[in-house]
Image 1 (cartoon, rainbow, N blue to C red):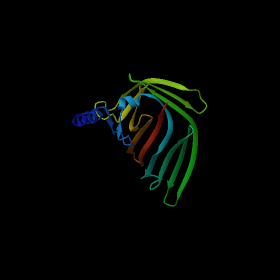
Image 2 (cartoon, rainbow, N blue to C red):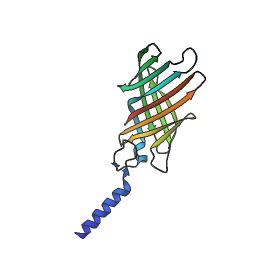
Image 3 (cartoon, helix red, strand yellow):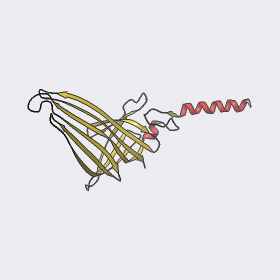
Image 4 (spheres, helix red, strand yellow):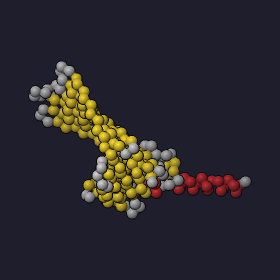
Length: 199
């Protein structure tokens, strides 16, 4: 009986050492594979969501007191990327809203290698596949590894890793900015996510 307890304690201890705990917002609570092991492989896009909001408020000139707000919402189904753009104009006399919807075929595959290389293969609309190669690295390689940066042709893109499972990856970008000039003030916020399934 005593030997069984010793073996059981050693087994639990080994699990604590070899498993990876939740780090991303929607990560599994516990995984038997490291984040390095889960991130590598070929990923096919399966969903796009989120929205972007841009607002301009005029504080001088002919448009003083007026404002324009544009909200772009994204959805994805069957490799069709849909963007719904709602623009609201506010004046002292009335508020008007216009909505426009655009669709585009979009297919993306990301191959993430253990040696730090990454390949993107994309198809937009009826165009032929475009393949680009670069490298990737963890934003915080010595800590929780909750961010990843891709460097392609000298341009870098950084994403938060909202979820990283053995078969599912969710990359997220959150941005906000404010600026002003002599006639207006501009503000923007965006939160976009892309979901990928491992092939």
